[in-house]
Image (cartoon, rainbow, N blue to C red):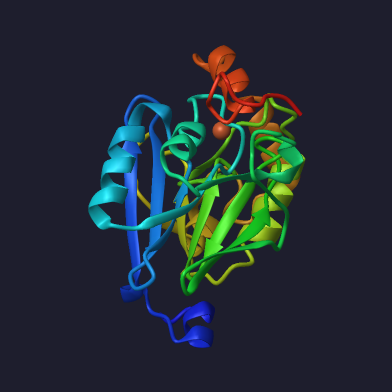
Length: 250
Ligand SMILES: [Fe+2]
């Protein structure tokens, strides 16, 4: 299927370098996207433990990292963004504007676009997992962070999360994308790598199949999830873009 972006720009996915990378301890996906011709690149949701792997891949591909982005302030792992910025001159850290991180270079709001070569990412604000969560749309791919997972969603019980807001974000912003849009989440715990908007609308047990907001809020309130193991380390570190020595706070 030819996406809207491809029709407008004459781009095809053959011109896009795309790597989905995995960090096993936190089950996090990191995504590298680059323009095959200009070599400009973007990294989404890096993890501190796998920075060396990501930098080696960036070097091997011979791409220029313009942005290292986080979809939200993660509670389950420390971001690699600060370390990567310190090792790649010119790379800029982008985070949701509503996270108010002074360590970041780019503060992302709904509708903003980030260009890399002839491609661009469009920012979709999708709060609910936290109050400062975004997704990134690139042609027929959407990177959903912890807003929409494959047959699941992010939790909503800390970091000013809101089940009602998450329901609205997913059903109004993400489910209105073309059905064949590929969904790439920040995590998967069951071995899935991607989904589509159509499949999540049909089969997501929490908010697919036409479930109501009331159903969703009730499901989320009854999850009884464990306290995240790394939250007490990850949140303060991520308030400083993952670098304890860097500018911290809001
Ligand atoms: Fe998260």
